Length: 537
Image (tube, rainbow, N blue to C red):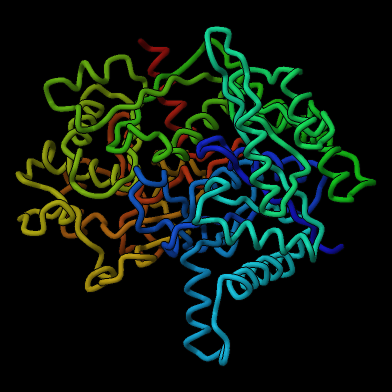
């Protein structure tokens, strides 16, 4: 079967949830057992997200193949429950770089290279190659940014041209605001946004309307009239308790049948077994039992929760798997010190110290870890969080005064955390860290790590330049720190643990592989330990 395409566009404003809508479309097509993958376009001229500050673009999502991508890829993987590839990410930087390199090589001799046709042809060719290589039934393409942005105009034009060659269904996500004391829903912004798309030569077949509450029937009728769409093609995307409810919400509006009809696909029935299992898992999130655990995320980017999107979802997955509800406290590590840690972390059943870069907020993380260790509060350190756990142990248990990381102080005497040998001398910042999936050897069955994974060899995704300095390994172990996991060659420390209580740090990012049906093992272990502590209060 020749690949068919779904293109998801956003109108009016950013932050409406195109990633969730795209993920839901992927999920629905997967329910029908179609072979489907996503492509995401981002208009920025960066090659990828690897050098971006989390405050600018949310978390950087890392794949097994070392790709550093937009956080929406985390959403895609969690919904589709499949590992994706870096080739599914198209950025302005990649496309412009490819065209200019071809021009320098002489591929366009005699031509003046332009946005149309050279850039748009490159985009279309890239998309066709992805669909062909992966033998896809349907390729779902999310266009980053908002219709009207200069950054994505040429890509939208490429999608128009794609529709001249292939079967393409356009899905427009828009916003229906509520005005005044009566909270009246207004359709005019969407009408104007739809008109702007039509001026670009694109008429969406499905209009998904994001709103605070259920879309008013009068508004649906008005939108149908002014967009020349049937009223059933106006889809309600009201706020839900959980993002995982959206596919079910769309199914309740016959979105699946409308989409398949527009794609010219028929003859298949929905896989009821897949759907039933998903409904069961979602119900555990939307209707959690009264038994809950309180988990604090102590990090430096907590003002923008998207910086830790995968950590949040991993907590939700693990708790749902254990039939527990969760309360997440977002705590800025800069607001914690040795004097107020007790008050700030009061009532927490578990603490997570997530990843990050730089020395800002690191002292607060260390103080939170010390409080957790001394008060026997279950603690999970991730990447920078593991490094902070090693520094805390060196300072407060081994009494190594001034123990720190060379990332924070290059001239420090005791660099308990130091840059990896393989990273020394690297000048290019993009794509040069220790990235992607790496295997880890767990040393003993009598460890938190082994009990979590149930295997001596595991694989998790990484993104770091610094590691525990092996020169200090013995000193830390003599005082009771357990080095429970290393690289398979034994050269790099991957996992550390406290001898007493539940405290584990991993250099990896286990949150990146967590799925609703298969939660990250270390998060499940943390939730179990936190629940045990909650019951003992």
